[in-house]
Length: 446
Image (cartoon, rainbow, N blue to C red; front, side, top):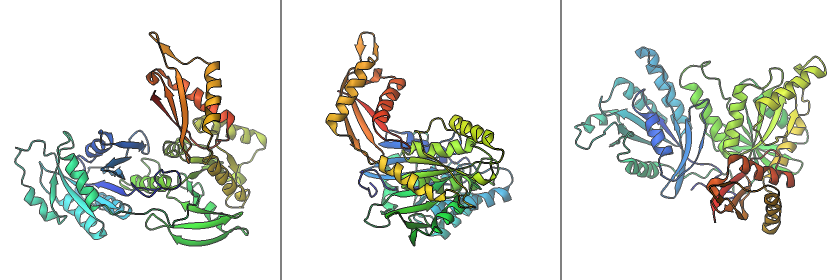
């Protein structure tokens, strides 16, 4: 697995990008990798209802995979240009590029365009010839050597043929990357949000504060620089991220890779500062970004920026608070800071709020105290039962921090309804300061 911090959870994972022209089976291959029973560890959502990013483990090593589907097939020139941009962006961000082609069609000019971009990037790569659904099927693999990407590997994403061989090839070529800037574990705070909400302005405002001592060091994402900041005696990594753009407002290929970059930053961070335009109010896209953080089990602070533009007295402030509570109701009681990155209003409150969430993520409850609390809650509310069977509580233990992670042992845990799981989580939150951080709760049979 990738390098881990104190919690044993991955600080970051090597990134594998699936690229290629439309209709070659990239999404099917992605679903085969992430959705099959190959020790999948978790998934994170894409920009809307599509899942474009996932994580898996194979032979003891973990990596992230991203699907770059979505080039609009119209006329050759725009398609070729979009394919070039998509392949270039994927190669720039990824540690390994998997080029997928259609074995039933043979190499096309667009395949060659994609291959040239990947070769120009200098990144490690693997060439997969998809839709080889039957070993007796006659497909001349030799013609794919013309792409210059090395030995073509036949695969059937539909039937799963040779999936293990492909994953072996990926691991063989995937660089073994350490994602921590150094051996000292420091909080990693990412500034995230959609475009034009003031992320870079906030970073600049934080770095320009008189009490902040900074120096720069190369970050883990290429073409960017993370900044080591000392705030009130606490060193932390401040991560600026690409904006998550709205679907339909940009050219094909670009949106998915802005998502890719932001997801990679989210994956590395401990706490995400989600910036929202206070003058515009929370949007559906803000909720998507919050969902990325939540599903990655990261801490969350809400920064309502452009507060200086909010005019009209208390009424618009109340309306904004209600809108935030409605649109982001699924968040775990995240702290809210009202700022203006332009004027500097309350900017000094951002890092302390993020560090408070980070400290909450380190909370560890002694086993005896934890079990006493849970038995008290269970006595107040009977566990669920069905057809004479009861999900009886046995024991609970905390198995990790950052995020706090708990294992509840039950007889017949399959009877525990999600509402009862929320009851257990609410009990933990009522006793301990877990504001702004998701709790990971596992139910297992005892």
